[in-house]
Length: 136
Image 1 (tube, rainbow, N blue to C red):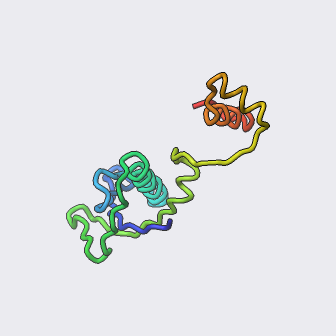
Image 2 (cartoon, helix red, strand yellow):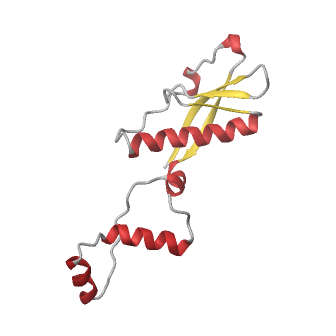
Image 3 (cartoon, helix red, strand yellow):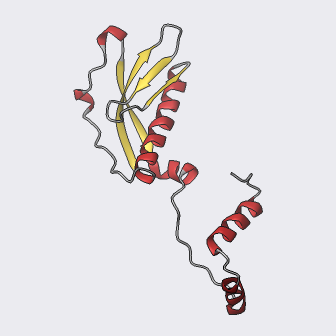
């Protein structure tokens, strides 16, 4: 899902930029230069939106028209559109469970059920170990 949100960029006295998303309350980030601020803005907004839909079970807010966003003129701010690829971000950082179908021998299924094993938990651990991922 591709999303575009306007972001307000404000130069900091010590250098760099602070970035605020008017449509995403509390979503604020910064960067030491414009490139880093843009990168951090994408990351912050993506994380904010993923949390909203996965943890809060809320709908994604509509983005305001960029023409309706007026940065604080006393802070020399400007507005830019930020592109967010929520599908890619979710693949990398999301924790929403995905249903998978698998096949195992009947005898193994019976033995596992007799021992009250949690198939999902065992498969997750096995995949993490197999892929060499450090356990969270």
